Image (cartoon, rainbow, N blue to C red; front, side, top):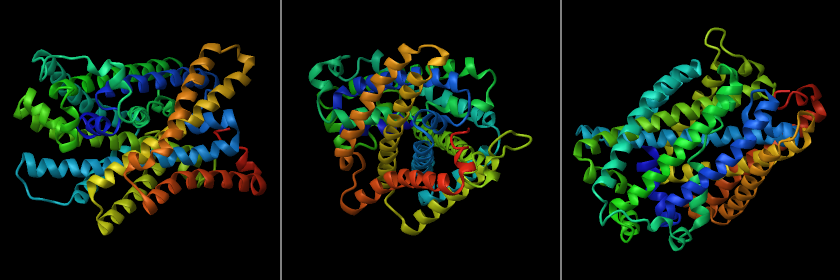
Length: 444
């Protein structure tokens, strides 16, 4: 629901307009190609740590630690963005659906923090069960919407303008593709949670390909239906005039007022699901850095009963609390805040995926003792080229992506590159002063 209501209109507006469904298809294809190498490397590497461990194995410990810092920051940005979206969504539910009082979004963000912190303390299975219920409700409503649009013939009959060359190349294709890649953030979660699943060699490939396939089909179909709901000839005017309400208004038009109210509520639960996912991934990256003694060793110890990174989870919750307190004091515009955080997350994610794609190619080419992996190398190489080009073009269009100019733009770029540089410098310092810790980088 987050993608449909909070993300899709922005993709159409800032990306390639009517051609957005094809951008989603292309983004899913690149992620699937990357997953081929990811799974092959995960099978051979056979260790936890996610991208942090993989980049270390492929490109060395210094780059690996820099990537670990980048991954930690990337998903923390996703977490903060989810809190901003959830706080705004719940405030809308209270006032719009239940005619309640107008309460600041930060209050609801604090409520979500309590909920996310409690579930994040336990094993991933607890969060997974909650996420399953949320996602099932969202999937049901989205499919109902898609079927209703198709059954009613959209605004002017079902058209296929989205798949024509002129529409695919319209607008800003690089931004569209970067947004599309951002939709698949967290697809590597099965690798990150390797220690917490049974039979990872079978579970990881099945879950990874299954998730990517479901996301590609659902995102592409819904984007196409959304465009047909208004008509290809007017959709740009609609998202320009009302980017925040375009998706929910089409739900009301095609499924009814009750579904509109449910969609508003599910936008909040979708944000809550994002909070749980981002909190758990961020905690695991912090846990792995703790296990390698980069951060205090206690952060890398699992709970004796729940087998969860409980201490790392607590630290993530405390850090989030600090950011939310800052938002109370600064009181930024929530819409602008969320857009900038979401754009920054997408940018950081593409940067991270580019590095991991390079690491996978290098590792598989070097790891000849376990046999050839030609197909995986070729697939990942294609993804690497696409991701690198996207990253370069996204850097040129950073203002369009985040809405930031001048000093704010410099600060946001400084956050991403500064954290990466900090990881590089810290690795060099460890190599010179604490070689025993340096040797552990990458879950070695």
